[in-house]
Image (tube, rainbow, N blue to C red; front, side):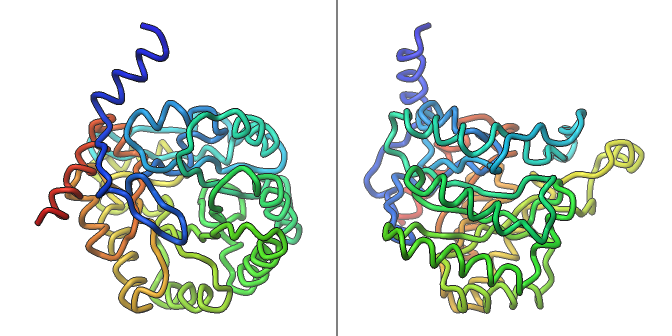
Length: 317
């Protein structure tokens, strides 16, 4: 089957086309509210193909200034009993300059976000420069940015969730954006493991820096309530947990942020979405858009269409 025909078949099977699915969030118009989360297309090489599965936006990355191989393999593990994954990929990617090359030749006009991080070898006291480099390199080629300081799979990265560091970094990126003049929305991706005090700090941080919003949430360091045996989990070792086990926790983070901030900023909800019901729960909790990753792997591409159809049914009342 030829590539164009393959794309046509996918669009026929998986795309739910309806103007009522369009949604404007932080100044951007999304064709549908369902996106693919960062980590699936790290280097921006599948953007055109992913549109054929009904996504309304694609988030590439996490990209780093220099190419890096990531952590040693084996580093991705399925937990079928839990419909979950544990990964410790470690920001493996071809580097931001290669991502720019791919973005320049993409055909789709679909909204693309750039998820940015630091190289593992970059010490934390120099991390800001890595984020600024990525921001400048991607600025003319993506529609929004995501600052990733919450991935548990990069050594010492989560230490960058310090409020003072984040305020300085986000304010710097906002200043660069203002000088460039294209008003690229900047979002912060947070962990699902933050306590209420930390979430309150995030709300205050967004008010101070005036960034566009939050992605809630990243993978989790927790291992609670798993059906997979403790021996198997111990054998797997470190890594970020994603999929059904973090669904409820991620939803509660969204609900807390939305309620405590009086819905002061947009939220992209991600974490454990394996059904249309899961996606609607995120939206009802306060998410403006949703993203899938592990659910897309386990449930297949029909999941995207099912979510979009459920959103339409809710609109119709």
